[in-house]
Image (cartoon, rainbow over all chains, first blue to last red; front, top):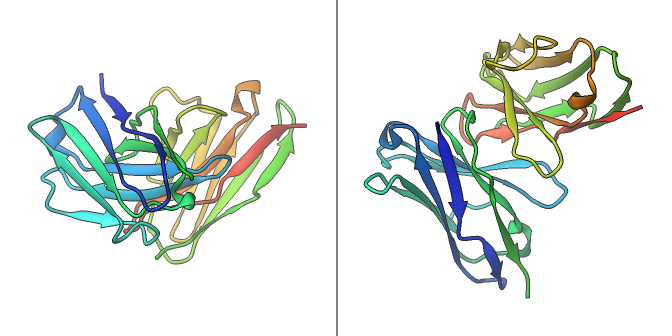
Length: 114
Length: 107
């Protein structure tokens, strides 16, 4: 059974940093791209970033480009999202989702507030 | 970037009604379109991929159609468990983009 489990969310001040993790199991992790998707409170879904299975290719939404960095450690079956220069508008539940958006984690809440 | 315009943004309907939600892409995306259902406090669930392919286990009352720039999600006979928010997603190119969502409420 495919499982994705996010962690690392929490309260951070504007301008601060946070690193999210997504632990994967139940499939050959290194063979698949993984996405980050976020959802602000009461709002719709927003795609954030994706990384290829090898980690060599990444893409970002314009809203996070230059501030967020996606990476993965295939030896640990874990995906990361390093978030820097955080803003209030980055407050959201962050989900990791499989290559085809079939499998999703439960999400981790990031709150950016002073 | 490809913009996805979903309509309506909200609607109310009754059990048994036939409902259609539309998603329009700002440029052609072939059939690289997925539909998701999300209930309050829950994780999004992919219902349809490749515009019209139903995910295993999804009831046959759900169907999708379209290609290019116009896509529809149809629920043939609404059931109580179908009241939720629905999103389309284009995966033809990066950045991936979701529609703004359609909240389907009970009339």
